[in-house]
Length: 297
Length: 260
Ligand SMILES: Nc1ncnc2c1ncn2[C@@H]1O[C@H](COP(=O)(O)OP(=O)(O)O)[C@@H](O)[C@H]1O
Ligand SMILES: [Mg+2]
Image (cartoon, each protein chain N blue to C red):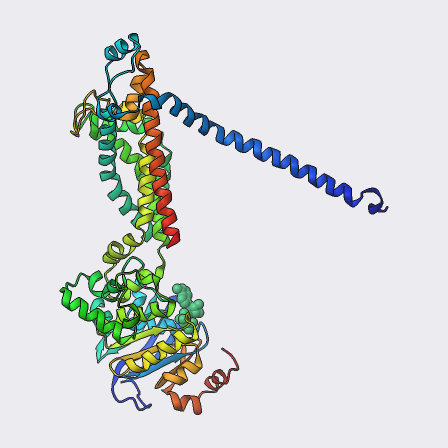
């Protein structure tokens, strides 16, 4: 049998072209499917929410349902803002970071140093499991440990403990990974100058991996900043600005939840969500900048 | 007492029965005995993998960073066992320069020079710091090239400049011995020539131990040579004598380029 007689070169080229085109169409369709939700979400948030964002939004307390209702009935914009939520979120993030960053970095350094010991493998597995624990479960933990036993009531501390536990695995792993990227030769340079081991870690390794540590922390913060479930069980929410660790505290996602449950305040959902989204976006951009900067050097 | 029959008058270092293994079965350095003459350049030569770096790194106890490494034998610095000294004291007296330049990436040129003080938490006043930086950079002939950019990061320098910066960092501690592990293998010929010139100049004040797998480099600048092969020190003597009249047939084969 002669293969060449049945199929011409043109046939093959033609088929290849068709196949290429089908493939291209599939890729385009799939990528449109992938990006359309994010575009729809962002455009919806901007269209519905931008009207409420003004100075008051950042400086006034959240309105109560009566204020919102009377404004609605007279056809005005809902008064007030979400300053108690913004300050609450910042306060919770600060507290959670104070707990999670030192512990996470130290644990990460431990894993880096003892990477191949069995105990380290155990810790590493635990960290992975921790990362998979649903956030509502951490809320329950915060409730049982702190609300019930430490602050005897809903409190910023309880919420930030739950958030800190969420941050931990991210910081531990990013610390270990960035430490691994510091060349061995830099450590040896320190050792050759007689620098004791703990000082090499402190003065050489941590500064050399600073941008990596920063990126890990920012990603951890953007991971927790929108969390609602654990806060519902721990910080509860508050109509006023609170900076005391043993008192209930508001947070932007908690406010969104409240607005959602109150038909008079639906409009505020969009602006608050837009704010939260913008915040996370900025954190992500900053960490991208840090990474790009590091790669350039 | 170790046999000393190659005319070394004033040994800074005496190495006796030194064996080093990365794992129990395979010794990378086997029963090495040697002397290092003061204010001279001693070259350690041999084919790749013969144990040159392993031997060199034993001299300032670098191997202690890695707990699995086994070291046997004795090394004396001015008659005192290095294992009885505190590591910081030993490493101040015995500095080390690596194959690839490794300035601290987060530190400026200035801080790189005084890194030994900074990282060890040894306090100096501004005058002392300035003096040490200027003197060390002058010693490695880098001062004129960097004096206007002392506060830029050391990693912005060229490879040859970085290597001289690393030598300056070692000199800043005012050591007695400087260990260099193939310091020019990552450098271009011009930068190599500069470093070689520098080493010849430095031996007036310091004792230099230089690992090289470049025979002509050893011939050009060293006073004493050691030839290693498969972890053993096969020959040890005055460089001139070794290059003109090698005693061990393996040395001769190596020097005439039969392997390497
Ligand atoms: N970190 C290490 N772990 C295990 N073996 C090593 C290590 N470093 C070197 N070796 C082995 O020890 C021997 C000597 O190595 P080295 O001293 O680096 O040789 P050289 O510097 O002469 O090229 C080689 O066989 C090498 O494979
Ligand atoms: Mg080597």
